[in-house]
Image (cartoon, rainbow, N blue to C red):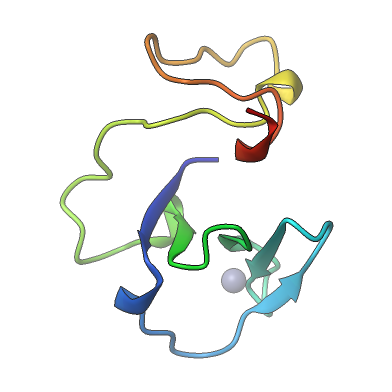
Length: 95
Ligand SMILES: [Zn+2]
């Protein structure tokens, strides 16, 4: 799932997402109606908010270049990673 990272101060929320915290590293936000993932908030980067690109329907002309691929050890065989982009077996904090 591609996330677009923004400054947390630049995001204005309308409504409340359901929060899910699998670990102490991050909190995920999900739509309280359909359960779709909306955002990922890494506790080590409180100044950033990763919004799922598919949730952005206006105000953005491009999502820009891919900066990193995470959780690549769990990717399906059919998924091709972009060339020349840093990869992380799991999350950003695995080095
Ligand atoms: Zn929904």
